[in-house]
Length: 616
Image 1 (cartoon, rainbow, N blue to C red):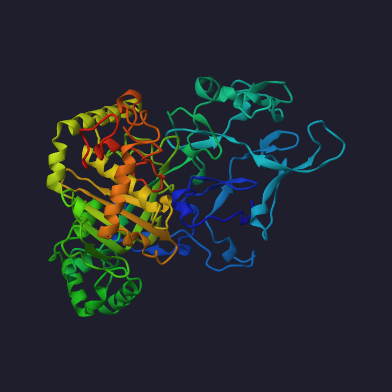
Image 2 (cartoon, one colour):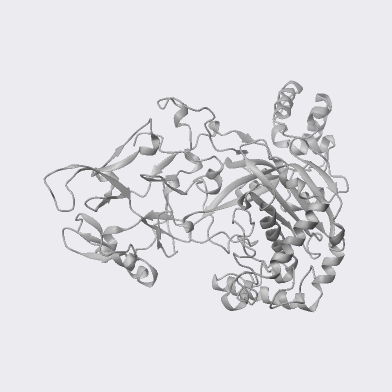
């Protein structure tokens, strides 16, 4: 099939919504984004972030050489016949099966019954048509009629995706009949009971309701192990396939790693060499080193590099190659711990233009609960896409083998992964560890903790996961709930919508590497130079006290009470207690846990619980 532009998406959508393996439902056809093997890395600008690259390598292997931004077209009104106009992410039409909107003909587009109508000047009008269609009643007048993608697909928990087996389904199994299939509606509503597929030759027909639920197990074949985005079939798949709808939210869940670009703790010459060792490792002499340093300084890749002499850098590189220097290359597995150290430092380092902060006073009313407040007037977040799942979202647990299979972005070990960077601002609130430890020992808090843990265990049991693993702790639930309340409150005053404000929770317990108790709320704008300061201004003492008062006051009564306040997560195996859309939930783009592990009873007294509130 010839190459044609078929539409446009934002670069950030190629990481969060329409990455490799995801279906893009365009106005007239549906396409799937191909794997990174089909991308041209020369069209993707590199992103420098040593800590994130190290974390990606721990998951995908040491062969990953770089993080790169998806291709984008900076110029407008390009010549549609030029090579640059076709420089986006590669896609292919999927599913193969198309349906004529006039006669209901159901057939793959490569059977020559449907024809692709290209339009390079209007990519949004690219579509398939049924050639010489005579309508459902076979009239004499023949004309080209639009064809639309079939809305039914097969997917499994191992991440495979395939066309719906229409012949197998309508004939009740393998059959020699290869008659023409028709898809039609029989009823006023579009429920699956009223959607039928019929064979013109043998007359076999079946309702689409038989493709779902228990009936689907009897009417669907085994999974073929197909990865459409890789042009590859796995040898074997034991997972049960299930029918899914085109455009369904469970068709593609991104798996990301993200870090905040923070100033390096070690700014000695050894720390600088460690931060850029991937670039310095193959340097042969000082003249080559000078070119590498010039390139890194231009990209602002390593803070402080411009202050070091070439001779000193070359001497340190020779020491490292000879083994005389300590190997301090980045191997940090816990991404948040270095961020916590910088955010809680008495005098955090600045790294303009990526990181700039200033400390402010804690509101007088909350000095017993809050230890410090830091305004991040400039920050940079870098995200990397490392895979995706289908049917079920990726689990946040520590064992990747427990959740659904993470589907790779390439057929071979990847040499680069897509990434994005956003600039913005934020407010970091650090809580008093002594007050928090004392609160955790209260009887009411322990009772509430048991309630939440019961829901956690039931939720994991229902998914055949270890019920005793990966419970985030009661302090995490409290901090997470406060973050959501503040996000909803900030959105009313700072000028940003709630979906653009994100959270980052630091809640390590004393049993971990070290106790942490902090919340970072930040907003970041993709593809721009930053934001305008509206969020930072609300972190000043006089504003933050008012916002906390309003957020906690609203949380006392929910419009869904008493149902919300009395919700028991153990009974319905859910991951939240007193929380719902009316009081605590936020956009899933803002929440790092998908609106899980929330309970406003840990923050303020509610109708059902009055002895577990941290802000009593």
